[in-house]
Image 1 (tube, rainbow, N blue to C red):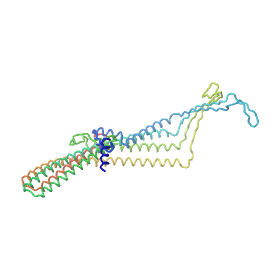
Image 2: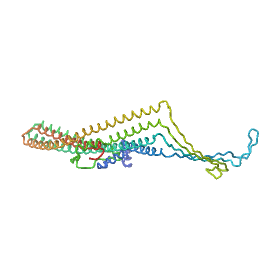
Image 3: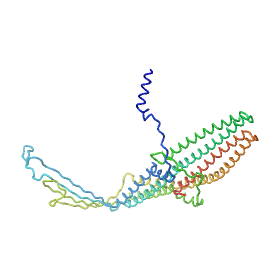
Image 4: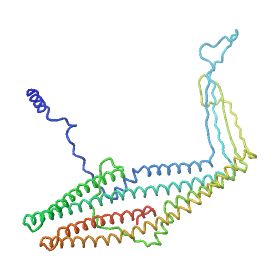
Length: 441
């Protein structure tokens, strides 16, 4: 047994220790990024933005296709057939047939067709395509600001977690100081053992608060990394977290921007598209006129040719007039569907405007309330810090109990948490207003 242990130790020493995959690898430190970079990465990598960008590209292609409907369609055709390979004669049904010395037959053609009149349907199709392009552009803008809102929320969440970590560190330092004071007074027999035990409990709770704050910061960094779509861990760059945002515009100007925000513009563009589709449905009752021209040539030779001087050519110009008389009520169905779609689009636009006004009222109220809470909690924290200082001095002099000190400490911890939350709510409220109006405030 001893020899086995010695042999194992020698092998481990010669191999240089445990394998690399068994060694603990320190986690990669997050890379600090600014809020501008976070927004840029989110707008670049967010799935909803990529989908909206693709929709804009598709809508632009539909507009080009609608313009192309006014142009003639052109096609080229070519073909070649070999009638013979091998001997110059062959036997079919008991007869000897002499084959042509030019076994290749070649054909070539050019065709063009254009719709001269379609009841104006192409114009309405073009108008509808343009409206859908505008709707796609408005949706892309809305998705970009939604991605920016998510990036800002997570960025501010990192700042709040960092503030909470600092507050937890201050809480731990104060609890440590109070524990030392309580232990010294207990040893001096001027305080009961209950004071030192309560101070120890407060100290342990402060240690847990530090751990929770550290975990919250790690989680906030992970959320920021995800929302930005970064391949490496990122965190918020150090900034002055006490600097608070403001809004230079008055409520009337904000309301005007909100009623013309990305969501409202998208709904309005969808209504324009529905109106164009409804008008275009009426063109199914009108006749359509189209023209087609074709020119073909054919010839034979000892090799395939696309065109040759000895080809025989022929051409034709054809005009077609079509008047739908009865199509099993399909036109009526399309007209009804277009009318219903227009009514739905009108209702959606009305609801989008009302929703924008509702959201502005709610978010603006949240912003104003957060401003007041920040001012109030700032004063509360200052008062709580002074109250704790006084209580600690009174307890050291024997003029107050440890319960008074612990009560002041609890009030200060809560005031710090409320202030951090108020700052976060204020920043997020402004970001929500910016997403609503579709511009930076």
